[in-house]
Length: 193
Image (cartoon, rainbow, N blue to C red; front, side):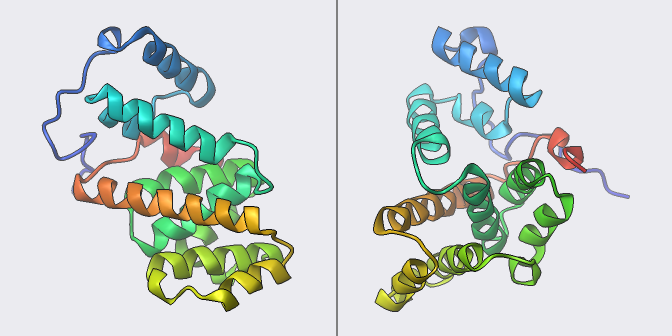
């Protein structure tokens, strides 16, 4: 059996040691270790350009943990559906683990990765994920009827903005992760099973 890659990315990036990071990023990585038991490889990869790491982590944290009517679980569900459509291995593994954790239901995380359409979802979640999927698969085909489906499911226009930004963010990160063969931390595979 062929072993899995043990690299962060396929690129030879000048990833600094933790003590070479700014004090702010040393603290950020320590928080990751404390809360997650690891520093996600995506953050390690971005650390080779600390200005990009700063921009990436600020946008990620605002989108995922900022004030919104979209819950953290719903945001992670969007991340998984977008990543599944894009076949982004890193994000399917990492965000699938987050869905398993936040939902307290390992099966839901797996269904999100494999085919969200077979999951037992509320009307709200189905509408949200259908929109995120269409925005990923064929963004030029989004029209008012798609936004109205979200409104009919109880979302307001600010929610639609948030859903679009979360889906857009993961479409960007999926492309970067796929382009550089970013590998998920091994710890993700066994989380919340």
